[in-house]
Length: 283
Image 1 (cartoon, one colour):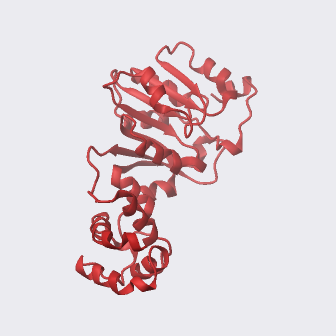
Image 2 (cartoon, rainbow, N blue to C red):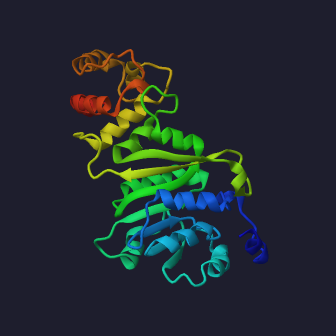
Image 3 (cartoon, rainbow, N blue to C red):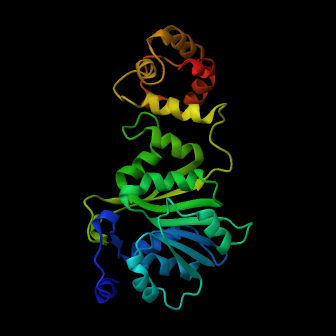
């Protein structure tokens, strides 16, 4: 793969987070974690030079790849030569109409597995778009920064637990498959990576009356991690005039106002969100 990149005189762009995975063993483990078979449809974000794409195409019925860097077209034409079950679209995965692309490439009743080696700088926005855009995705297996993977899988009380943990776990079940050393990339990034699998929930983890407010509450509760829940709510969602009402509601739902947001479960946030409904108009 590295020889092919040199042959095409391709230079990697740091601004695009281009760190190509070249370890064949890890490529195979990523594909294995996706549980692909001859009936699988795959959406790959950021195929790069096509090393992972080749492995996916060998196992799946169809691979639809989205690549932001048009300069890779000649490289991908070379590495994917002979794979008639691969379609490559060039453009930004955050801006392209993925619904339109998938409707052209897969049957209307099919589900899609996302497999990707995501650039660190756009990991969160891409994941959240894929999770919230109503695409026919049933699972994702993605390589991301190890620290971010820990945040996605974190549970209450852990240092890495935060609003991103809740946002992802509300919609999916995350599970870290393996950690990946920086030495298997070209060029080497500054940090280690991890492969995480996200199984999309058929029903959201909790039911809430007002979903946008639920997420506003979560973000406010983590705004200043060292502050207590009541102080974060007063400083970031309401004001001091609401303190007594907030204390009353927190006590009513059985949540100690002196706790920190990082100790609350997603179920407790849901319960508090619904109970705070009477205050939302006064925020």
